[in-house]
Length: 331
Image 1 (cartoon, one colour):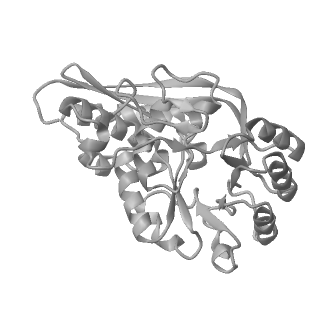
Image 2 (cartoon, one colour):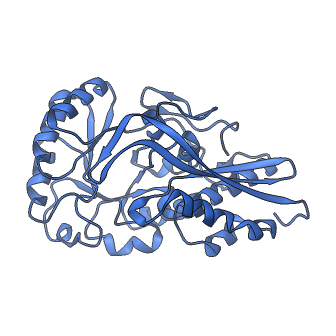
């Protein structure tokens, strides 16, 4: 990126309709709003996509502005290495980091994993998400997806034992993971964990609110518990060792693939299992995350499966199997 060739930066907001709606404990939405960054040089263009996360005060407009504010730095030779200190972690840096990696791989004539010295990703089974609803509605949605080997069940507080029991009855053979999205309380934590254990759930994700999850260290956990909102990048890992068994790595939280890969290495060194997760977005968001899958026990990259339409040249999904990206998409 130090060549005298002109480097340009472009960014835009894109919208993808969701098939039906996507509901978690914090609300529902009917479209995925993403921000795409494109860095071009010498006739080549690298792309990256991010999803601004309202939970952390991000908006599409502010994220777009944050990327556009990097115009001068990009023109001055910004690299993915110098980017890490130039922007805070979050969605905006993710889009730019992935775009820079994509461009660097294209310029070198290498796949991104070869460029970064990482194992080549292979096809993996992804979780498929069942949105939060009444036990009856969730059972009906689960029955339609019962053939899938791994289901991720969104829970939301009151009535969760009934929801998970109904889901298990509708999908007796599937492996189940649960995501409470911070909706449980210390008062109902043990009862809800016990209900999940009774239904054969493998993993419970973020049962308590971030910053108020100390109770997880004081109880005997009957199944593995995974941090999501409580964990962001490498700096947040060490304090969670007594509370969680696994961590959900999402590129929009880490601020890009560069930090996500470093975080995965650090998490494994600390003894955490790894989930590689996603927001609801197009295949361009999922593609870089595929490079983390060789280290992951759980893969949750079903975002495009929840859309009414994906972008062109999207990832290949065969049932619940997701395949590495083609060069026409990314990397």
